[in-house]
Image 1 (cartoon, rainbow, N blue to C red):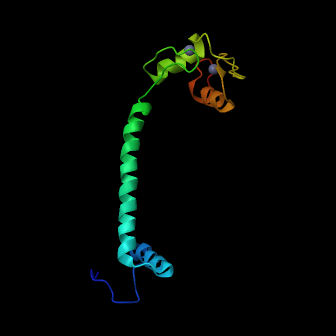
Image 2 (tube, rainbow, N blue to C red):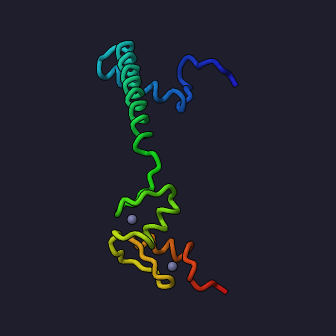
Length: 127
Ligand SMILES: [Zn+2]
Ligand SMILES: [Zn+2]
């Protein structure tokens, strides 16, 4: 395979299409390549800075927090939280979807389906 660019014609579209489109766009807008290239770099840089700020911010709020949504009870794992909400929470509203087998309640039908299919301990086993 040749590593040099063909002079014209047979461009490898996958690698050159974006650049080609960009040149077309610049030409159509009557701008010159150098200025708009700078603009692109500046924009990229801005976006990067924004991303960095955002990720710091996210680290703060994305810190795993398993505290109870309803009563605020402090918990440290998703499992603990699930158990608390299912059985111990005094403030949890009643949910509409309850398991036929063990009586646990779920806020969504999907939650109930997943429970019944995978987690329910009282579900009769298939023979
Ligand atoms: Zn609670
Ligand atoms: Zn169940």
